[in-house]
Length: 210
Length: 210
Length: 210
Image (cartoon, rainbow over all chains, first blue to last red; front, top):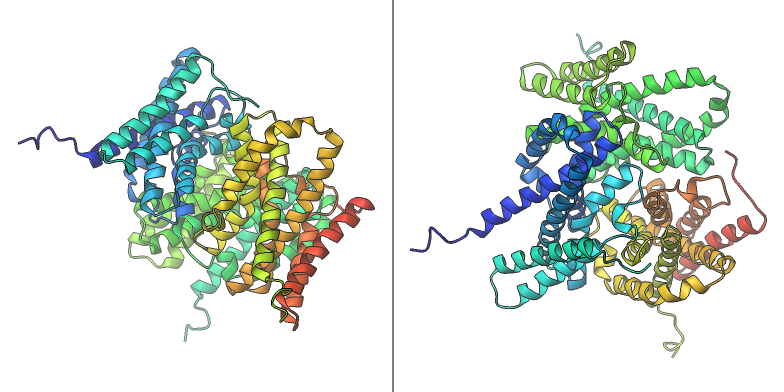
């Protein structure tokens, strides 16, 4: 009779994925506002940040329909959030929006990395390629955001660990997925490792050498 | 006996499409000249501006052969136009070339938007995705042009309506395509709506809020 | 009994391809170092420079698995080289690293151009598209490197011949491939023409008009 308390892994993944998409959309949103774009630009940059990494992964793995075509409620969600957030965001203090962007981005990074790795495993890719697909899914939304906003991508500039966290999270998933533990544990641990490493890096100012 | 005056819709679409490609190629051409590129750069930027939006759409919809491989006479056309235009364009007054770029770009936007929407409808995409494919086909040639020329894409900067016109044109096509009117009318109305809205925006200085 | 001295064309092509990948990776590497990126950025830019052109070609031709998924030892090779080169490269005099970058880039350009053309021929593309796929494979790694490093792509700026050399090399392959000569000769001549033209351009300061 544990059917009521059994956590449905698919539903859980969907909720977490939606959270990741919203997080990335917000970071694109704030960056586009900074560049003084109009509402179309703001929505497009939010969209590209949220769906860019996953779209590139789907193109590379030749997955169709693309994940945002299959779940087109996500695109609608980003659209509505962009409309709602437009009048609110400018009134936040810049320190607060800075903090929100970092937290949202970290959750998105963790979720997208494990999603990319898991899909590449399902597609039968070799291990090293699975990790790369995870990292690509995690970081390329932000890379495309920065390229369109005419900046050197944040993730490549010398700063706190970022892609490295994604890298560690992807390997965590692969190892746990190979061990006899449930998928939910593997996914959860991977997201946790990515987020924890990112938190430690920001908290204790850890950086990679040049 | 109206066979003589019946307009062949496929031929019409081909002519209009060729016009759109040339328009976008010219805008890429002029932008590359401004950045002082050599002839290879000028041709490549013209090519990317003309075919970038459609190529991205074909990649996302997984359509092969790509439209410029299927109609490779278009690529030859852009190549020849780039050769012919090179010695002529520098002698135009900058005000005139500015005007030509705006008109050419508007026609290209209208044509490419409706072409993208229509192909997505044929591919059985959901309505919201059809509109996005139309807008992507319409604006991404210009976005790629600006990214390569190291500018924040014109279409996202606060200025006259642009992607919004494409958006309106795509919806016009979808609504008319659903009503019992001929495809020619649906296509023509869509291009007209896009161009008219763009004209009104430039004429009366209409802009979106930030 | 000439089995011992017969040159195995497939093995030869693999060696030359690996050389091209390493060359491009080095050029990405040096550019990323100049932009003061951390090790993740350096590796990613090296990777994109080495595999970007071929990946774009594979996406456009719809070839799967991608060439770096099929030969994922290449990605590992780039990864190891990036680790090894990190402590060595900063100690090279900048004049020397400048020279290495130009030579490496030239070899990579020649190899990738002929590889792209040859694959497009195998895919049954029309002649003009084959040449374009060769040029895209040859130059787009560098274009993506420069876009990510927030520069106008080197290849489009007025300078020594570059894409033009690739263009000449692609045509050389197509003509020799059509004549009754062996593939090895066609490939070798194409790489030679690209490299020789590039050398002459740098040596005698040949440039294209604007």
